[in-house]
Length: 124
Image 1 (tube, rainbow, N blue to C red):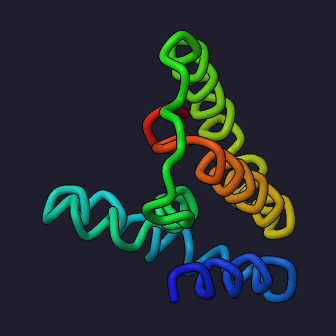
Image 2 (cartoon, one colour; image 1 turned 30 degrees about the horizontal axis):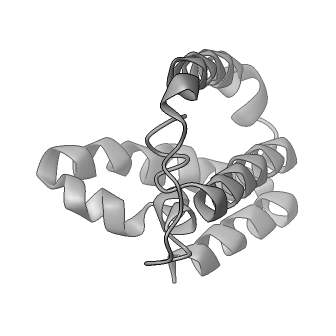
């Protein structure tokens, strides 16, 4: 259900981007930190990236190489700074660009989740 919702959000960002951006930034995004405060477990069960990261279920996968963790943390922080800086000037105004960014992150989570155990959420 969560992945279907994510797909609908991405599609709607291409079609009705102004209304979707308004709902996303004014309603959905402000609710996310509240789920952290109420119960972190709620977010873990509805986060599309976590779901994609765990899509292989109980199939054994290696852990993400610990030697690469500092680089992935630096990459994650850099991406966060760039994406937050681009938030107001790019993502608030352009639904298709936001949809492409969401898809890129989702594909990265899926690929890393297929290859490594906790490949995305615990590294990037």
